[in-house]
Length: 386
Image (cartoon, rainbow, N blue to C red; front, side):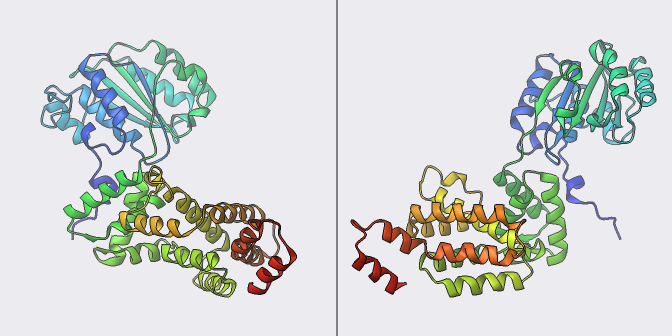
């Protein structure tokens, strides 16, 4: 039986063109190679799983390629590219600063830097998680980073730029990697599914992309897990079951109960959600997100801010047209207040239930506020209705 290779490794980008969601960085690096304006030191920073180390390796391979394409991409067939891909290149060194963070480790690196490349134009040194270096190691590295040999290029990668000494930052070209957009992640997952003959639903891929919070590696890990769970039939239902996410339909149904002032059904629905194993705090945060999405769906100009699939987007647009803005804003404020009080409350369930009851009475309160003189007779009539 063949060894299974996780998607994050199997489909790791090998060229700038295949990097997902970082076109501002790949375009700059390709232009630098084309114009022969490569810096001596680069700093790649950003959240986890967005392509920092991947871009560093692609850059290292490309600048030593002897047969670059017209698009400034590595050919993948020359001796330099082949030795890089098989892990036998003497011009490429990668150091994990998390486990090699002492002065001695940096001194050993500096000794290697003094030896020029035997083949190829550059020697490239990638230092991953560079913020983990000790203060003494940083100081030992300073002089080499400022005045390296002409053939040496350093690529530093970190998730925590604020921990790096300003003297190091001033010696590097800094590239800030973005969190990858939901649409980019779901599109990439869909391409992988087609290659692997996996049946998928678009709504399910969007949920994975949202849960990944901008990290493609996290999305690919979840994708592999759910594909195994569903035996290559990834559906929306299987995704929310596997990732323990509340179905959108709960929030759409709950909003209908709230706007109609149906306290009983709202509380029964919340009880059902708790019985399914969901946490009250996650629920109230999810409701706040749902209300925010309804507010965004009110205006065609802001619907692009909805990071959901087309099917769910239409549901939001439909419900937003049926829900007054005044209700959404008041309910959003109550949900936010409940979230702030939740952790300090001794009766957390009551906190959420109280917020839901208040939301159910928003329509009657708004109706009361709109009366011209708030006459006693009108107020009594409204009270009788409620």
